[in-house]
Length: 86
Image (cartoon, rainbow, N blue to C red):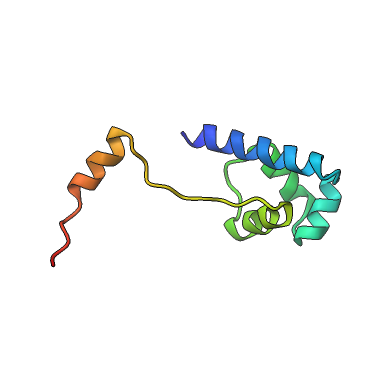
């Protein structure tokens, strides 16, 4: 699951940067991150700093969204949580 996410993130960032006709250097300067960081994101490196990633995405006009998983594993976790009291 994590690998699929990093691959998709890498592809989306690279595609958006290309669409905007930015080099990795240009994007790094605009986002206030290092060019190396941009390269790592586009390579799908699994360990990146969240604040830097968010700055990069914001510069590209992209956003990171969270959602509740609907797979059975996520449902099983939900079943283990204590019920809320009224």
